[in-house]
Structures are given as structure tokens and as C-alpha cells.
Image 1 (cartoon, rainbow, N blue to C red):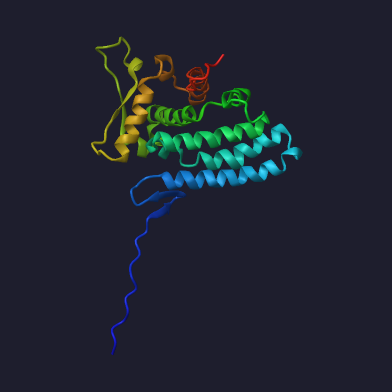
Image 2: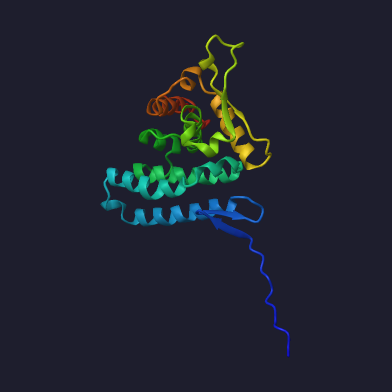
Length: 224
């Protein structure tokens, strides 16, 4: 009797978990490329019917179908290199141009200001800092983040214990948890004191959005 023929075991070079594609080197380059491809496909379809769409309709479509896809699982963007982040930013700027309908040679800053949108890196920072706010003021709502972040107060440096609500890293893990915690902690600690002392999440997001708009990243010009 002949022994059974064993099929060769193939090595997967990428896998998909909860909608996020990870390659065998634990990088997200493929996820970025697939996300951009998906958004561009939808954007191309929208361009073909843009003559029949009002500005309000285009904005609604962009928020529900395009930005939701582009910004899905945005916390992983903290681990992207500059090249991959620039790819996402270009696609984000294309969405803004689709809504405004401005000429192709118009600089993306003008499109974003017309829509009163933040630049993509600052949108990611807004999401991160909102999570940090929850970890400080509502730790029961962010148990996973609260495991690696904690607020502390230094009474010797400032008169009020509340005036130094900053984040430190709990985890000794040198992997993704610590990197993400370190990224959030640095962003939080760089905020003005008045923002860090807020207790209302809605108020915090409004004032944080205004603060980030003042921190315009594009070297072409600064916000008005």
C-alpha cells in the first residue's frame, strides 16, 4: 500500500484580522495599499456621477463611504512610516478635492480649509487624544487602554494636583502596546494645560479641534 501523498504546506505571507491586513513581517503596508485601492475605486464611481450630486450629497457620501473606509482601524496608523502615511494623506486630499470641486492644480490646503477639515495627521492625533481623555476621565470605558496608560500627579511641580494630568506607560512590553502608549502619552503631554484639565468630552473635542487647526503642518502656509 502506497503511503499518502502529503501536500506541501504553503506559507501565508499575509492575513486579515478584523478587517486589518497584516503581512508576515507584522507590517501594515498591504493594508494601506488595499485601503487606498478600495477608496479610489469608490471615488472613481462618484466622479462619474458628480454632475448629479449636490455639495451636501458629496459631503455625506464622503463621510459615510470614503472616510469611514480610509480611517478604519486608524490606531494602527501610529506604526506607519512616513511614506505610507503620505499615501493615505494624498487619498484624503483627493476626497476633499472631490467635495469642493476645485481645479486639480489647487493646493490641497485650500480644499481642506474650505471644508474646515484637519490635515490627516492631525485627525489621527485627534482620535488618539480623545482616547487618552477617556483613559483619564472614564477609565472604565477604555479598559484595554487603561492597562497601559495611567494619569499621575506631581504635587511638587505645580500647586494643583489636577494641573498635571499626564500619562505614563504601565506596560514594560517593548512591543506594539508600549509604542502606541508612548505615542499617545507624548501627544497628551504636549497639550496646553487648559485642555488637559477639561472634564467634558464634547467640550474637549471642540477645543482640541480648534487647537489642532492652529497647528497646521503643511509648510506651504499657515492657517488664518
